[in-house]
Image (tube, one colour):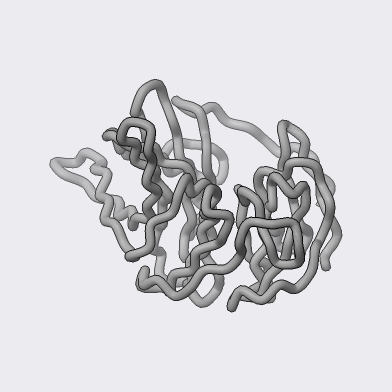
Length: 227
């Protein structure tokens, strides 16, 4: 992996989250002004397959796809005055009279605070970066809450406003520990493995098919070798 640009394609609104689905399609979370949200499906060449408008008193921030079950997970934040409540929801693409319909249903019993990133491992387990609670939430493949790990601090296994989360080929959870300026690795059970790298204000992480770790921060992408 060398980071060479292959292609780009326009989107109707600002893209905020992206995931790869079956048949190499791309699912993209889009945000517009006010409370405008949409989930769009594109072909691998960037052609629009469908756009699902998901407007309401909430913001959608990220998306993940379980490639085995084809279930799609979104993280959303509802705002009420000065308070915000983060939720994990299933997104089920549907059509009514031939028009795409945004069908959302909440799962889990543990609420987060400003959840910005979600990922799914090969077993279908769901991991969400619960930013303002300084932890990662874990749900099983059916959306049942399992556990959480991380707490505010600087020490081993601690987190401070984590923003990005991903899973590597061995099932290890990679977390962008944003305010601590580092990337952390945990087991799927939440045991701390190691600090992968020290990078100032990492925002998002992803793992390539060859095991390379990709870290994004403020328009800069860093590619790290397989660990």
